[in-house]
Image (cartoon, rainbow, N blue to C red; front, side):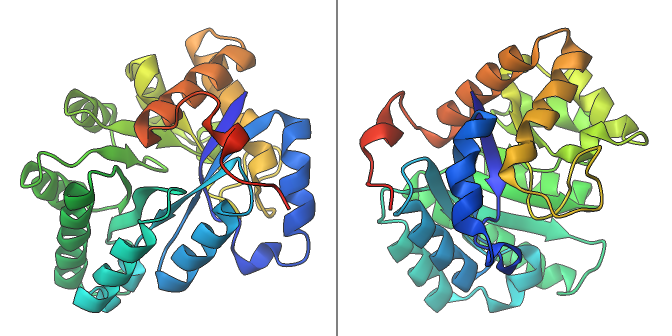
Length: 264
């Protein structure tokens, strides 16, 4: 019923109970998860997890905080990882000007290189973008063949519609459940339903009433319930349509996960 389109279940926060959480997802109606890399080690872990669990898929790439490591050798490694049929996206990649742990110029170069890799491999991208709206839009204009999702969306409804007009999807985390989440709420209300994804970004961004705790994919139905309330749907309807959207973006046909690999 629910597709968590952005998770980091390989993260060390789950080292003590990862298998138990993964085994429990079905009891919460969570049938599929996209596990997303932030650098080479996490990308490799994501692929390894996805090769063990038939309901997990992987994305590989370098977050803006890792942009200073993006060179030809790293891109070659990501290209090799994409040979796995479990890899369905490049990500998370993009720009983050909030902390600016890596200089902006390096972030932009790394973003463009990874967009080019996605275009070469005909894969969607998962974009992390924070306080860098103008530069992100300029880079996308230079890469019109690139498409994917802006995850944990923090822009305006106008920006969201600009992206959707160009074939992009918009992902919403537990932030949409927060009392002060005005922009996320406005974006949900403005978007066509066939372009909305739900996600946890776990172990971060836990929705209400779990805000401040460790997040995991079992909480993604709470994001769906909030979107349902905003759009006059049932939670089940919101779960089904956002799952269909994620399958479309990541090119996962119905039934594929049932025979993809053997659950340990």
